[in-house]
Length: 490
Ligand code: HEM
View (cartoon, rainbow, N blue to C red):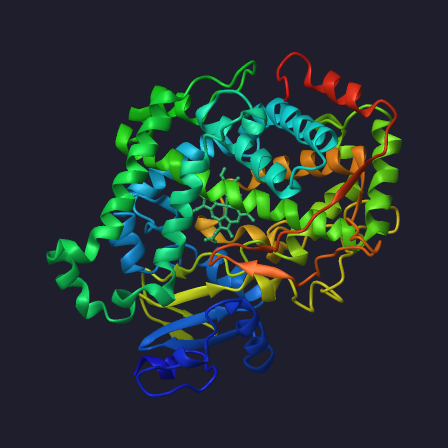
């Protein structure tokens, strides 16, 4: 029997396994609590399917990094993959030749060196964000962050002007469709994943698939529309993803249909994750003003009255540590995306059969007591030595960026996302003192450090307000100067 070769875990019921013990939201917390009882490697059962939980950075590095040749598939997720996505979405594909071709194309455009070609655009988007907060403090700041995150990734894929100041957000339709898919394909709403025996019936009867079919048609139309409307990135030298793929389609081994879905997927994967992580950064700055002040001291010393640029980055180790701490403190995708074994293999005396699913519990890993003392505290200095320089990296921590997952499936937008985060955080701290709003009695209206909402994949702070107080004389002129002639804002 398979179970005797797997690590043990919480006892469950016959046939149902642990199903009834699993919460429908914040699953990572429950799994984290079980890690205290069963250790960093244990098994839970959803019906007859084993899920192996990876609860420490060392175990995840062994299983998903060092054994990535056999742990890089995705679970079947029948409703999502077969009926909604028709396996066109890279995030949920197995590591097939098509998946490899798409990763190669994305990597060529977003690897650590290539990603620098977007730096100018990212700087100007950050200036736009700061200017928007300055001029329109009445606007919900979350909406500003959302537009910023969307604009950066949208322009790198499809080109065009900054969407931060467009009246109509061209990404609204993708957002709606992404939300629909996330909602409809959540495990608790998928009968076919619990009872796969129903699959042939659903394949035969169109009526059962009507929601998924409509979603696919709508998303495909949107993907075609955006792909065909792509232009160069206004005023920058950077090549857009669409331009590069159109030029090198044969080299990448793709059709236009694949490329269109790939670009759409990239936008879907990159937008909400960036926006969520930025929001977590703002939450941390409001709860830990002394950290914000420390970063501001370094920013002022390095940049003075001129807005930060990527050239300043190497001189800002405290900010670099602050970014590491933001993704460690509250990883925005706390349970990552499950990996699946494509072959049988052995590890630590256990045998993991082909088809075993691995839950990469980033939440537990970023709270690993061997790596991070007092993990609930937001403390960038944990990454710094006494002189304020970055400490060497532990090889199991993926350069202190566990929040981007593992192995061959590691987030392909990681370096691009970290650049976006760096420049946005630098601008926000340089330009503003961030404060909580106050109610009619003068009391601060705060959002707690655990006041989050779970949207199945990302987990982000619930909506809250901020008051951005300018820190620099003539801030508006300085921001406009940083924008140069590229973007005029409303
Ligand atoms: C701070 C922002 C981000 C976070 C926290 C994040 C996190 C993650 C995580 C945890 C995974 C799963 C990795 C695994 O399976 O081991 C992932 C996958 C992915 N991410 Fe990101 N991500 C972010 C930004 C981005 C951006 C900006 C892009 C696009 C440029 C992107 C594109 C992708 C794609 C396409 C995948 C799927 C990779 C695959 O399945 O092979 N992400 N990301």
